[in-house]
Image (cartoon, rainbow, N blue to C red):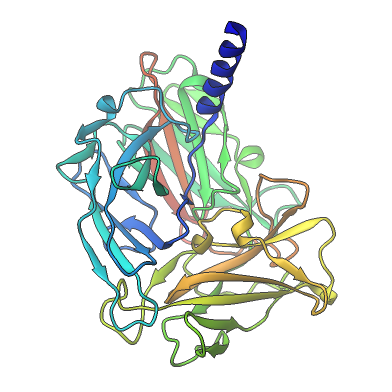
Length: 425
């Protein structure tokens, strides 16, 4: 019996240790969740330590009455597993805070309660830099979890130098982009770079194809050089597709039809086609982000409607991709590949279809494939959009450091560069 109890305890501890936080919604009544730097919807949620900067959170509960929502923070390591430290070591103030600011939707057929919050504030503030999870839950009970969102608190202690160049590899020269990177660690005490320094590179805030675990190939005093040709190469993709849903009264260019006979409305986008065989076309996009906005009302957060938006992708020859799943990807799907944004192949029509429940706004998105026998790993654009070196992309570099005495990873540097404006000259 003791042996069985010990085995169960060990298994439970292993599961807890392996927990990795992601952006997820756990309550079916939660609608749109937007989390960004104050007044900038097209930004990842990042603040500087002790700077007074704030993040803006908006979320909708698709019920007609307000409920008691609370929030808290969890410090995570670079791999988004919870840090093995007490909450008192990373949080100044109260462990839980209530969300008191809300409005019941007005002038909309679909009723919901729109909540908003500026954080952190004097009552709850991160005390150290690093990766954080925002947990929002009901009635002060963390087991009634509504949703989670990742955010970053950075304390710049290193200098990052980076630019974008074409790979030397002839097979990747016209289709990929490499991030040339060096880090000046300044006065950080690093005896074991593999253990103490961690680097992550993200393309357009995509979690599925983020590059992690890269190691320096050359160290000159305080300068760490990385192998861009081998470790820091991304497919260029194409510019994002778009859908303007700011008005359901007037159909935008990408909307084929709006069915207003039921609530919520049904919005049918025009068919999207394979672009992999077409040359690169310069178009202005917002690199996968979306904005909640409307041309018809004053405040988009509680005066905009929801709709079921129908996406259709037409593969070459109207044939399903062999051994591949197709996903809709962008901030509208949390830049993740899950069952919620996996498309279904309609054999009768020869197209992939998916319906998403979206709030009025302007959306960027794309289609990616992933092998059907894989449940993790990156999505690929090769079969749906193709890849081009010329594509305009954002790349964000994160640098984490762990001192020999600490049990968590500090975020000591962060830099965002653009493939068009930060090219190697």
